[in-house]
Image (cartoon, rainbow, N blue to C red; front, side, top):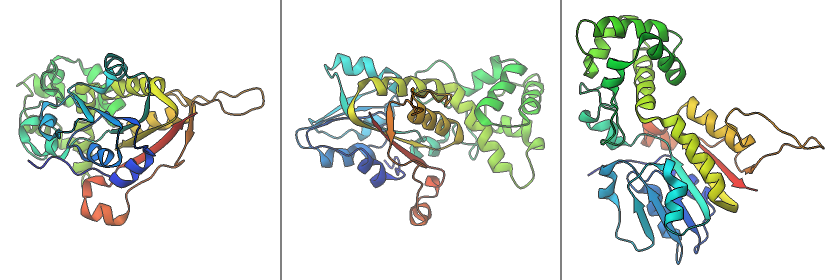
Amino acid sequence: MFYHVPALLDESVRGLNIRPDGIYVDVTFGGGGHSSEILKRLKKGKLVAFDQDEDAMRNVPDDKRLIFLGQNFRFLRNNLKYLGIEAVDGIIADLGVSFHQFDEPERGFTFRQDAALDMRMNRKGPVTAASLLKNLGEAELAKLFYDYGELLNARRIARELVTARAEKPLTRVSDIIGAIGKIAPPRQENKFYARVFQALRIAVNHEIDYLKEMLEQALEVLTKDGRLVVITYHSLEDRVVKNFMRTGNFEGEEKKDFYGNLITPFRIINRKGTVPNEIEIELNRRARSARLRIAEKI
Protein backbone atom coordinates (compact mmCIF):
# COMPACT_ATOMS: atom_id res chain seq x y z
CA MET A 1 0.00 0.00 0.00
CA PHE A 2 1.37 3.42 -0.99
CA TYR A 3 1.32 5.59 2.12
CA HIS A 4 3.40 8.75 1.96
CA VAL A 5 6.37 10.57 0.41
CA PRO A 6 8.14 12.56 3.15
CA ALA A 7 9.14 16.13 2.41
CA LEU A 8 12.71 17.26 3.11
CA LEU A 9 13.63 13.69 4.09
CA ASP A 10 17.41 13.91 3.82
CA GLU A 11 17.62 17.41 5.31
CA SER A 12 15.46 16.51 8.32
CA VAL A 13 17.26 13.26 9.16
CA ARG A 14 20.65 14.97 8.81
CA GLY A 15 19.29 17.65 11.13
CA LEU A 16 19.03 15.08 13.92
CA ASN A 17 22.84 14.77 13.91
CA ILE A 18 22.43 11.05 14.66
CA ARG A 19 24.86 9.14 16.85
CA PRO A 20 24.92 5.38 16.08
CA ASP A 21 24.34 4.53 19.75
CA GLY A 22 21.80 7.29 20.46
CA ILE A 23 18.11 7.20 21.35
CA TYR A 24 15.72 8.94 18.95
CA VAL A 25 11.98 9.49 18.66
CA ASP A 26 9.85 9.78 15.53
CA VAL A 27 6.59 11.19 16.88
CA THR A 28 4.81 11.01 13.48
CA PHE A 29 5.69 7.58 12.08
CA GLY A 30 3.17 7.53 9.19
CA GLY A 31 4.66 5.63 6.28
CA GLY A 32 7.91 5.10 8.16
CA GLY A 33 10.05 7.18 5.81
CA HIS A 34 11.92 9.11 8.49
CA SER A 35 12.16 6.11 10.79
CA SER A 36 13.65 3.99 8.03
CA GLU A 37 16.41 6.54 7.40
CA ILE A 38 17.10 6.91 11.12
CA LEU A 39 17.44 3.13 11.52
CA LYS A 40 20.00 3.06 8.68
CA ARG A 41 22.19 5.34 10.78
CA LEU A 42 21.82 3.48 14.07
CA LYS A 43 23.93 0.57 15.31
CA LYS A 44 23.33 -0.07 18.99
CA GLY A 45 20.95 2.87 19.22
CA LYS A 46 17.19 2.81 19.72
CA LEU A 47 14.23 4.40 17.96
CA VAL A 48 10.79 5.00 19.50
CA ALA A 49 7.98 5.82 17.05
CA PHE A 50 4.48 7.18 17.65
CA ASP A 51 1.40 7.24 15.43
CA GLN A 52 -2.25 7.31 16.46
CA ASP A 53 -3.53 6.21 13.04
CA GLU A 54 -3.94 2.44 13.15
CA ASP A 55 -3.24 2.24 9.40
CA ALA A 56 0.36 3.26 10.13
CA MET A 57 0.97 -0.02 11.93
CA ARG A 58 1.09 -1.77 8.55
CA ASN A 59 4.33 0.08 7.82
CA VAL A 60 6.23 -0.94 10.96
CA PRO A 61 9.36 -2.96 10.06
CA ASP A 62 10.55 -6.00 11.98
CA ASP A 63 13.51 -4.38 13.71
CA LYS A 64 14.49 -4.94 17.34
CA ARG A 65 15.87 -1.39 17.57
CA LEU A 66 12.39 0.05 16.93
CA ILE A 67 9.61 0.40 19.50
CA PHE A 68 6.30 1.42 17.92
CA LEU A 69 3.53 3.00 20.00
CA GLY A 70 0.06 3.46 18.51
CA GLN A 71 -0.58 6.69 20.40
CA ASN A 72 -0.78 10.44 19.97
CA PHE A 73 2.52 12.26 20.47
CA ARG A 74 0.98 14.26 23.33
CA PHE A 75 1.79 11.21 25.47
CA LEU A 76 5.51 11.43 24.65
CA ARG A 77 6.87 11.92 28.17
CA ASN A 78 4.72 9.31 29.92
CA ASN A 79 5.48 6.63 27.35
CA LEU A 80 9.22 7.24 27.49
CA LYS A 81 9.05 7.06 31.26
CA TYR A 82 7.15 3.76 31.04
CA LEU A 83 9.87 2.41 28.73
CA GLY A 84 12.54 3.45 31.24
CA ILE A 85 13.95 6.13 28.93
CA GLU A 86 14.93 9.27 30.86
CA ALA A 87 16.41 11.30 28.00
CA VAL A 88 16.67 11.14 24.21
CA ASP A 89 19.17 12.50 21.70
CA GLY A 90 16.73 13.68 19.08
CA ILE A 91 13.05 14.06 18.21
CA ILE A 92 11.57 14.43 14.74
CA ALA A 93 8.01 15.48 13.86
CA ASP A 94 6.51 15.72 10.37
CA LEU A 95 3.24 17.58 10.93
CA GLY A 96 1.78 16.97 7.47
CA VAL A 97 -1.20 14.78 6.69
CA SER A 98 -0.09 11.54 5.01
CA PHE A 99 -0.90 11.04 1.33
CA HIS A 100 -2.73 7.88 2.37
CA GLN A 101 -5.06 9.89 4.60
CA PHE A 102 -5.75 12.48 1.91
CA ASP A 103 -6.22 9.90 -0.83
CA GLU A 104 -8.70 7.64 0.98
CA PRO A 105 -12.06 9.36 0.36
CA GLU A 106 -13.73 7.80 3.39
CA ARG A 107 -11.35 9.65 5.70
CA GLY A 108 -12.93 12.96 4.61
CA PHE A 109 -9.73 15.02 4.73
CA THR A 110 -10.02 16.60 1.29
CA PHE A 111 -12.62 18.73 -0.45
CA ARG A 112 -11.69 17.19 -3.80
CA GLN A 113 -13.69 13.99 -3.25
CA ASP A 114 -17.20 13.64 -1.86
CA ALA A 115 -17.24 11.56 1.30
CA ALA A 116 -18.46 11.54 4.87
CA LEU A 117 -17.09 14.41 6.98
CA ASP A 118 -14.84 12.43 9.30
CA MET A 119 -11.30 13.94 9.43
CA ARG A 120 -10.17 11.96 12.48
CA MET A 121 -6.50 11.01 12.60
CA ASN A 122 -7.48 8.46 15.23
CA ARG A 123 -10.61 6.75 13.94
CA LYS A 124 -11.54 5.77 17.49
CA GLY A 125 -11.86 9.43 18.48
CA PRO A 126 -15.33 10.65 19.48
CA VAL A 127 -15.45 13.87 17.44
CA THR A 128 -15.79 14.14 13.66
CA ALA A 129 -16.06 17.16 11.38
CA ALA A 130 -19.76 16.35 10.94
CA SER A 131 -20.36 16.38 14.69
CA LEU A 132 -18.62 19.75 15.03
CA LEU A 133 -20.77 21.22 12.28
CA LYS A 134 -23.85 19.83 14.01
CA ASN A 135 -23.10 20.89 17.58
CA LEU A 136 -21.12 24.14 17.50
CA GLY A 137 -22.93 27.47 17.61
CA GLU A 138 -22.47 30.11 14.93
CA ALA A 139 -20.03 32.16 17.03
CA GLU A 140 -17.99 29.04 17.87
CA LEU A 141 -17.80 28.06 14.21
CA ALA A 142 -16.74 31.58 13.25
CA LYS A 143 -13.92 31.47 15.81
CA LEU A 144 -12.85 28.05 14.55
CA PHE A 145 -12.55 29.23 10.94
CA TYR A 146 -10.82 32.46 11.93
CA ASP A 147 -8.34 30.90 14.36
CA TYR A 148 -7.50 27.71 12.47
CA GLY A 149 -8.15 28.71 8.86
CA GLU A 150 -7.14 32.38 9.14
CA LEU A 151 -10.22 33.17 7.07
CA LEU A 152 -11.25 36.83 7.16
CA ASN A 153 -14.84 36.00 6.22
CA ALA A 154 -15.14 33.42 9.00
CA ARG A 155 -18.41 34.91 10.28
CA ARG A 156 -20.01 34.69 6.86
CA ILE A 157 -18.86 31.07 6.48
CA ALA A 158 -20.33 30.18 9.86
CA ARG A 159 -23.60 31.92 9.04
CA GLU A 160 -23.98 30.08 5.74
CA LEU A 161 -23.26 26.71 7.38
CA VAL A 162 -25.74 27.31 10.20
CA THR A 163 -28.39 28.34 7.66
CA ALA A 164 -27.71 25.23 5.57
CA ARG A 165 -27.80 22.81 8.50
CA ALA A 166 -31.25 24.10 9.47
CA GLU A 167 -32.52 22.52 6.26
CA LYS A 168 -30.47 19.29 6.32
CA PRO A 169 -27.56 17.84 8.34
CA LEU A 170 -24.08 18.63 7.03
CA THR A 171 -22.59 15.14 6.87
CA ARG A 172 -20.70 15.03 3.56
CA VAL A 173 -18.05 17.06 1.76
CA SER A 174 -20.60 18.06 -0.87
CA ASP A 175 -22.82 19.52 1.86
CA ILE A 176 -20.12 22.01 2.83
CA ILE A 177 -19.31 22.91 -0.77
CA GLY A 178 -22.99 23.43 -1.46
CA ALA A 179 -23.42 25.65 1.61
CA ILE A 180 -20.43 27.98 1.11
CA GLY A 181 -19.64 27.66 -2.59
CA LYS A 182 -21.34 30.95 -3.37
CA ILE A 183 -18.94 32.89 -1.12
CA ALA A 184 -15.74 31.24 -2.39
CA PRO A 185 -13.49 33.92 -4.00
CA PRO A 186 -13.42 33.62 -7.80
CA ARG A 187 -10.32 31.82 -9.13
CA GLN A 188 -9.28 31.09 -5.52
CA GLU A 189 -11.86 28.46 -4.72
CA ASN A 190 -9.35 25.68 -4.02
CA LYS A 191 -7.35 27.80 -1.58
CA PHE A 192 -10.55 28.85 0.16
CA TYR A 193 -11.87 25.30 0.55
CA ALA A 194 -8.43 24.08 1.65
CA ARG A 195 -8.44 26.56 4.53
CA VAL A 196 -11.99 25.68 5.54
CA PHE A 197 -11.09 21.98 5.65
CA GLN A 198 -7.79 22.72 7.39
CA ALA A 199 -9.66 24.55 10.14
CA LEU A 200 -12.09 21.67 10.67
CA ARG A 201 -9.29 19.09 10.67
CA ILE A 202 -7.26 21.03 13.22
CA ALA A 203 -10.31 21.35 15.49
CA VAL A 204 -11.30 17.68 15.19
CA ASN A 205 -7.81 16.50 16.09
CA HIS A 206 -6.83 19.29 18.55
CA GLU A 207 -3.71 19.67 16.43
CA ILE A 208 -2.39 22.97 17.79
CA ASP A 209 -3.06 22.12 21.45
CA TYR A 210 -1.45 18.70 21.15
CA LEU A 211 1.51 20.15 19.22
CA LYS A 212 2.17 22.53 22.10
CA GLU A 213 1.98 19.68 24.61
CA MET A 214 4.45 17.64 22.58
CA LEU A 215 6.92 20.52 22.21
CA GLU A 216 6.93 21.23 25.94
CA GLN A 217 7.54 17.56 26.68
CA ALA A 218 10.23 17.37 23.99
CA LEU A 219 12.16 20.10 25.80
CA GLU A 220 11.93 18.08 29.01
CA VAL A 221 13.13 14.77 27.58
CA LEU A 222 15.85 16.00 25.22
CA THR A 223 19.37 15.64 26.54
CA LYS A 224 21.82 18.56 26.35
CA ASP A 225 22.78 19.09 22.70
CA GLY A 226 19.79 16.95 21.66
CA ARG A 227 18.08 17.98 18.43
CA LEU A 228 14.44 18.91 17.84
CA VAL A 229 13.49 18.63 14.15
CA VAL A 230 10.02 19.70 12.99
CA ILE A 231 8.48 19.96 9.51
CA THR A 232 5.50 22.33 9.34
CA TYR A 233 2.99 22.89 6.54
CA HIS A 234 1.00 26.00 7.38
CA SER A 235 1.55 29.31 9.15
CA LEU A 236 -0.31 28.42 12.34
CA GLU A 237 1.83 25.44 13.31
CA ASP A 238 4.99 27.04 11.94
CA ARG A 239 4.47 30.09 14.18
CA VAL A 240 4.05 27.83 17.22
CA VAL A 241 7.23 25.88 16.43
CA LYS A 242 9.31 28.95 15.51
CA ASN A 243 8.32 30.85 18.65
CA PHE A 244 8.98 27.88 20.91
CA MET A 245 12.40 27.16 19.43
CA ARG A 246 13.41 30.82 19.55
CA THR A 247 12.06 31.85 22.98
CA GLY A 248 10.87 28.74 24.80
CA ASN A 249 7.24 29.96 24.76
CA PHE A 250 4.45 29.94 22.19
CA GLU A 251 3.80 33.66 22.17
CA GLY A 252 7.33 34.51 21.05
CA GLU A 253 7.80 36.67 24.16
CA GLU A 254 11.49 37.48 24.53
CA LYS A 255 13.09 37.30 27.96
CA LYS A 256 16.59 38.65 28.40
CA ASP A 257 19.24 38.35 31.08
CA PHE A 258 20.97 41.23 32.89
CA TYR A 259 23.30 41.74 29.92
CA GLY A 260 20.51 41.81 27.34
CA ASN A 261 21.08 38.31 26.00
CA LEU A 262 18.01 36.35 24.94
CA ILE A 263 17.12 33.59 27.42
CA THR A 264 16.21 30.53 25.37
CA PRO A 265 16.41 26.75 25.84
CA PHE A 266 17.53 26.17 22.24
CA ARG A 267 20.21 27.10 19.75
CA ILE A 268 18.63 27.53 16.31
CA ILE A 269 20.42 25.49 13.64
CA ASN A 270 18.68 26.88 10.52
CA ARG A 271 17.40 30.31 11.48
CA LYS A 272 15.00 30.92 8.60
CA GLY A 273 14.00 27.31 8.19
CA THR A 274 14.64 25.09 5.18
CA VAL A 275 12.19 24.71 2.30
CA PRO A 276 12.16 22.18 -0.56
CA ASN A 277 14.11 23.01 -3.69
CA GLU A 278 12.54 23.19 -7.14
CA ILE A 279 13.52 19.61 -7.98
CA GLU A 280 11.78 18.18 -4.93
CA ILE A 281 8.66 20.27 -5.53
CA GLU A 282 8.55 19.07 -9.15
CA LEU A 283 8.71 15.45 -7.95
CA ASN A 284 6.37 15.97 -5.00
CA ARG A 285 3.95 18.89 -5.37
CA ARG A 286 2.58 18.32 -1.88
CA ALA A 287 5.96 19.26 -0.42
CA ARG A 288 5.73 22.86 -1.65
CA SER A 289 4.39 24.28 1.64
CA ALA A 290 6.81 22.36 3.87
CA ARG A 291 9.28 24.19 6.12
CA LEU A 292 11.91 22.44 8.21
CA ARG A 293 13.02 23.89 11.55
CA ILE A 294 15.92 22.50 13.58
CA ALA A 295 17.00 23.45 17.09
CA GLU A 296 19.52 22.08 19.58
CA LYS A 297 18.88 22.06 23.31
CA ILE A 298 21.32 24.20 25.24
